[in-house]
Image 1: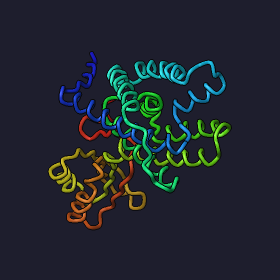
Image 2 (image 1 turned 60 degrees about the vertical axis):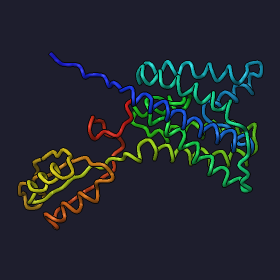
Image 3 (image 1 turned 30 degrees about the horizontal axis):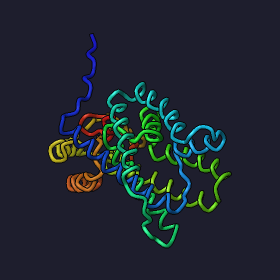
Length: 291
């Protein structure tokens, strides 16, 4: 009889922290929209951009109603593919962002150069959206689609946002100036990169392969000093045909220096390969938010 995995349950403190992060992230995004995007007449991407395109084609439907209708299937998708917790927190995130857009005053940051405005907007939007995605939810819209793509197909959140927004901007270029579209593409690109850094970059994991005659001593030190699990793989040298023991481990980005010093101190001639990982799923070393 197989046992079912226990669902992840958040503590009340974590729930409160998630809501605080959603509020901070939504306020940052609202500040970028009301303080930079609107005063500089930049084009809007994401689901809002899609709503504007549909509104242009069918003026009898309001932008707000169209945006709501677009989000309905996305929230159903979140419920079905990601989970009820993510669905509930995304409702909170969407509501928080809506309130923040209503409450944060529209005021220009008074940067003379529009390129600098685009860069600043991208940084603020990416940081705000990234903070929201670090919680158990999102701000709805594109964020939901991005999480679904990450969970189902391991596509980076920033990649999904950048791809969809680029398509939306190409379509909206029919109705807006090329200059406005290009500046908005800068906003989209920068925000996508910042989101990747905030969501996965700050908790990046590295996979490590170590081949050494002193493999047993190195393995014990990794277990004791770095406190990471080690898998021992039996192999064979391609030239000498001698038996080899390959150590495999997954460590945090901040632990690379410690690992290299440890291996160098035991066996300076050890063969070490350190590679990037897209995502790691595990209760101890995993780097995916608990969506």
